[in-house]
Image (cartoon, rainbow, N blue to C red; front, side, top):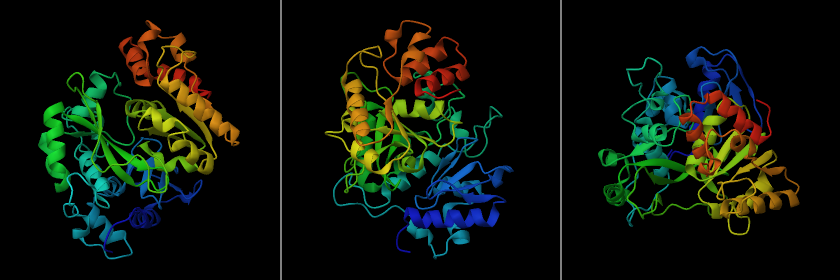
Length: 393
């Protein structure tokens, strides 16, 4: 092998499942469901997408790519591939590619390797709380600034686990970035401070095609989010790239499509225990518009499950008009005309029981914070969100 592709990694992951799982069966689409043998699980609560090189533990909310999967076996990725890959893989294949000619340009596989390195940095347990274990330590580690920001400033409670991981970019971990991007990232971080890093995954292949920096506390008057140079919000064939598990939406019973990054993380946390529900997020509101964005065409052509669109609540009420609501309405109408099941998220349950002025809720992340700050039980917030989805608790 001269390069590692998602399918190559997925083949090794599938070989590990076949060698270790007591229960393994075909899931929906091209997935495989199996028991979490590394934690003594007996029921098939873990789903693997071999072609995408991705997995998700429905019970714990863990998931990700091959590096996190290898860690579940107590192995580094090179050692995991030596044991389970059919092709001979050398450690040098895992090293970052040579610097690109232009600053910040991505070469094949660099975005994926950078994301895995960043998110793995915070996977070790904190050693203090006694609750986290290897692979999920990022949920409480105090040295993960992005997770601390989600908790302290955005109101995510400790139970609100993010299945795709939470990674932080700081000037202290510049070495994990490709040399071609390090100077640009360093300038951005020095000017705007630490950032939450989010991958943009292809809706068609699930490959991480680029990364987004969401600055935690940027100076006034500057953009909160930056795409790294060379990052595109769609593949060359027009397939959208998005937040969350964008590459798993084709096999989902229900697709929750959010506007923006933090709402995507909030929806992931709120739906953690819901089987066959996949949360994805559009980079910006323009991507939701079927006339200018790529999501409409892809959803109409590729997704058979229900689509629920969660826009920002720009006007502070379900009936108000704003860019988010307009794009949501246009997308739902576009999909309905093409015979797809689509509907907007119903904000009324969350607004009706809001513990203070509903005008303080501008998006899903705001609702999470308002309910957390009021002392509302997390399970109750989940029930209200599910009511907005039209699902029974």
